[in-house]
Amino acid sequence: MIKIENLQKSFDGHDVLKGISFEVGKGEVFALVGGSGGGKSVLLKHVAGLMKPDRGSVTVDGLEIGTAGQKSLRVFRERLGFLFQGGALFDSLSVFENVAFPLNEKSNLSRNVIREKVLMELENVGLSGSEHRYPSQISGGMVKRAALARALVGDPEIMLFDEPTTGLDPVTGQSILSLIDACHRRLSFTGIIVTHEIPKVFSIVDRVIMLHEGLVRADGTPADFNESRDPVIQAFLKG
Image (cartoon, rainbow, N blue to C red; front, side, top):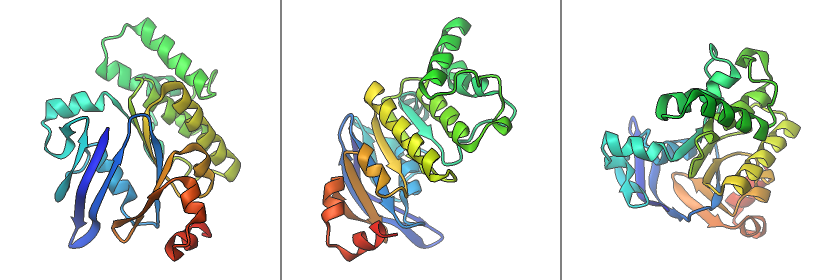
């Protein structure tokens, strides 16, 4: 479904991605791990079409994202959900209004249908009864849940998660990972999770890809990583 070939990206002469290649199958969920500044979030933004590669390509179901026109990108993004690192909720909108925002902007659904979909998605993420509150009135974990509901309300085929547990305590972070797993089992989306939550994330993903110094250092199952004797992988697993 997603094919990344020789993806290269530099900023101010600094090579961040030096030739990344891998494929993601439909319905597969994998963790993208590696040290800070290793290019994980940059790669995610290329998949979403928020950045264009210097060289190489990202192709989704035959559409090359980096060279696609605005109309094709718009259609593609209707299939895409993105959970940003900080949640990226609008402070001036209520939880309900935040979750409803993509439907109001991109769909022709009636107000009643939008309301039903939003309330259902809030229930799915455990936020029933919080729809009238504002981001400043809820906890960090609730902000992430609301942002997840907003990303999922359009029933995306592809989900991108950029550090979904950053800034959360261990218990809340684990609850967010469990919620992502439950949402995947319900919707069967194809998912990429950028995370530092090792090894907690291993229980909810099919594969793990590790970036190191701008390249793919390893690509395998969680068991492959736990059993690897690669010193870089072992050092990362041990924190």
